[in-house]
Image (cartoon, rainbow, N blue to C red; front, side, top):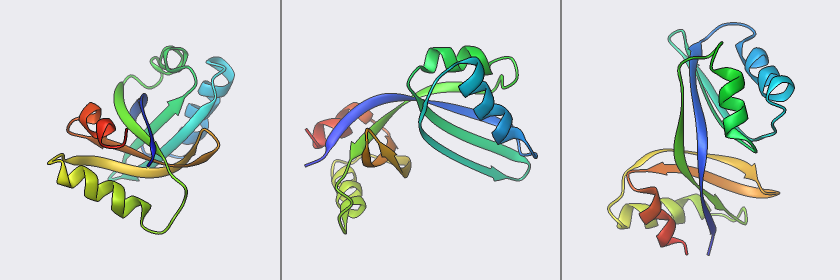
Length: 131
């Protein structure tokens, strides 16, 4: 079984340009004084996307909102895993069998162990699958 925790993730849309990741993460560290617990980023067609789970989302949002106004906070489910063969397959199968849609997922290291972050059509229902 997996430890399943509902948490909030900050999603930021930016220009995809040199130095954006540095600027964003420096604001988180130096102005918000917050720790990034999980991060995901991509750049496509001139647009950058960041997803951050921090130890103080309220402070991070305050620090970022001036320079990065396209941000929002979303609920996600974090599943701590043992890093075994098939963990993601098992998680996605259980979510699929519960008739839930997966919006996105990514792997990370969370609470000192490997984890899968997933956004579904019903995160609370998904959390119940792993309780």
